[in-house]
Image 1 (cartoon, rainbow, N blue to C red):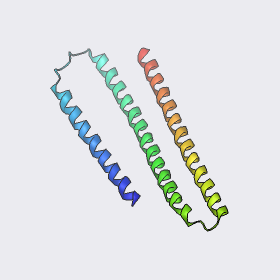
Image 2 (image 1 turned 45 degrees about the vertical axis):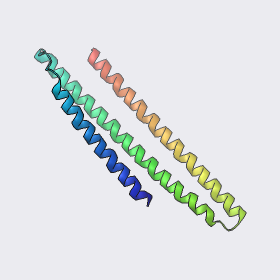
Image 3 (image 1 turned 90 degrees about the horizontal axis):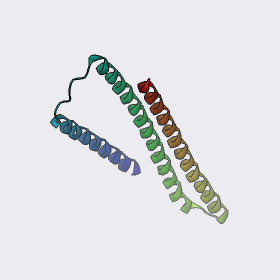
Image 4 (image 1 turned 180 degrees about the vertical axis):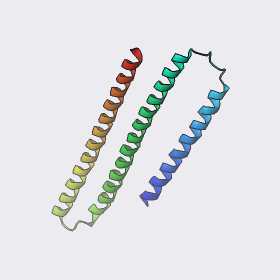
Length: 135
């Protein structure tokens, strides 16, 4: 049941992104053209834009993977929360509750660590780009 909800959410998000991209392209098409720059600048700018697009694409791919992992862990924790009611004894209830609590915090820690790594990687790329373009 939750898989269908998450799949629908994923599809809706993808469609929203596509719509935003199309709208952005139309808006950019309405702008007047920019003055022509010297050819040496054009090559450097195209190279910069290509590398920047690759870096942003990689960052977004990692973010999507992190988000999907968070959703999967959340779904597993929700399923385990519903299984707590099946406990027969107080000790079993206590053990299942502690296990669920530990899994929830482990998921949060992993998500935080992944986001921190992605942020650090993005800042490293940004610093590389700024150093190269300043040189």
